[in-house]
Image (cartoon, rainbow, N blue to C red; front, side):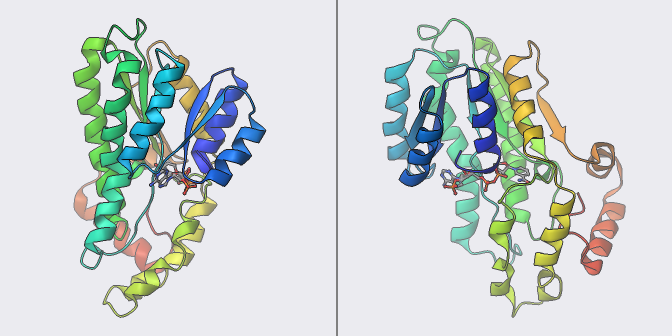
Length: 276
Ligand SMILES: NC(=O)c1ccc[n+]([C@@H]2O[C@H](COP(=O)([O-])OP(=O)(O)OC[C@H]3O[C@@H](n4cnc5c(N)ncnc54)[C@H](OP(=O)(O)O)[C@@H]3O)[C@@H](O)[C@H]2O)c1
């Protein structure tokens, strides 16, 4: 929660009086946030890929409390590149951070969310920060789309399995949001310069910039997280997109061939990396 959606959610939830246990990778980020939020904030230092460190950090939470109001699975990365050339390590890293780690961490905290009734009487909630890429597949962001589609499935499976405990499991599906996640991918397509795809990939920086122009402020997601925490009957998924109806049309109703054509045209013009 050192940046982007996580950082803004910390700001809002802290202002509403919640105590937040926030996962952070770098000690200097933890120090800075502890100074900003001297009370009701406990930094947990771990990388979601390092399960031993996650288990160690979880002990701090179990020592501090007997129940959690919610678990928010937010950490995520985008590893772009053509399916044909994406390295096995990059593909695995994408799936491990965005998907497999969510299962490992969720399972660890289930007792505090009410899956072991001896711990908690009022069931907690699980909020997975998914993406519109969990509903729509974009070329050259394929590994990210695959990770978020699988996260959508995982959200549904957990919701149906945890129903017996009253634990609500919700997916938030943002379209472009103003955070650093896409900037982190500027120039990464250069490594595919000698592939056939480079006629399109060389426009990636421009496409990212264009995509960001339509990005929504991060507070849209924090406010929705708060709603998911407080609403008696939250929905199971929320799409957050500037053109929600157009996106739904593309994702659910238009025939594949028409959507493919729209994507090809958009990429050829170098308008946007993703048509959504
Ligand atoms: N921004 C968008 O347009 C958008 C759209 C749809 C969905 N989302 C989703 O929103 C979530 C948050 O992204 P964001 O937009 O806020 O981007 P961000 O500013 O890049 O934040 C990503 C966060 O994830 C953390 N993280 C990444 N890898 C990690 C790891 N291995 N272990 C622990 N923490 C890790 C980062 O920590 P460090 O600071 O230490 O790197 C950072 O705090 C992601 O799941 C993303 O897929 C974003």
